[in-house]
Image (cartoon, rainbow, N blue to C red; front, side, top):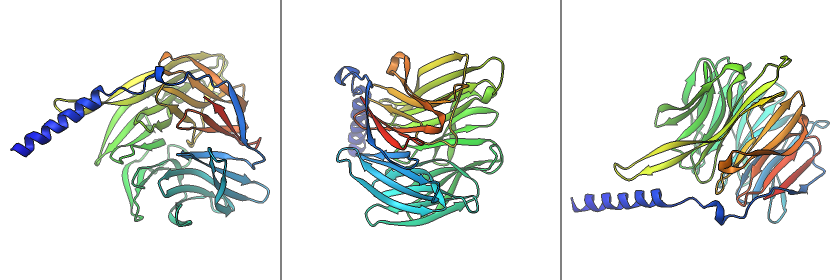
Length: 371
């Protein structure tokens, strides 16, 4: 009994500490301007940013003439570039890194299949884990190296619709499935206990898988192409999402609705429990143009958590421009940081210092926007 009481007291003190421990206040962080930028890599062949881990930025190149692709990484501190994988007749769709493990998804053009590989960054060899003729629409990896992904039929709405897991020994498990609908994105808590995914069917949902059970965290309308297009799990554990509705292409009146928010963990000391709380940073109706999103998802949503600055890539139509927008923390004000032809794609990542790195597909450059 003495042991149980001391353990309970320790848990209570820990819960109180977590509850009272503040996030890094905005006043302690240098005010951002994102007014200056620099090209950090140029002369690339159709680059696409795929992930960032520590100081390493992971990206791919694609030579459409030779039908050759490279998976590479760039050290944002030393500027070293390293080629990790070279393939022919395919291109890279996704990548996710945790420690020594790099998972990547390729689309093989001859046969129209997707394949999932795991690269051991220490040993330098890749292992084929999974092959499917369905779409892979979202990927993530936890701190232990377990890989999570969504597998969906084509065209969207056709079966299968599955949330999948591959563990370190290569065992493949279907965590959740439906006969209709579509999963747009997948993210996982670093602990691996909670897997979050965006699902659209009769409505647009954010759902959480935990220990065999699926809970609905958010419901929005799926009318007018309503979808939770992107998810992002920040290193501090905040779950960011971007939801959008739009007018039909060619409609006489163009409009869009944008919503960007995040879920954060709140720990209650007695009884000891944690709950997710929702904060909406941006909720805005736009007129005179519609907003489109990229699918399948990629690096199109990110955040600098100490100040809750969030970023996302959207396509304005009929402007036909891709835009990285900056939502300025709790104020909800936003501005366009980058505007380019939609053929530039503009995937991006946010570094630990808050700098934004984005790639331009046609221009062949990777650019850093300085916080």
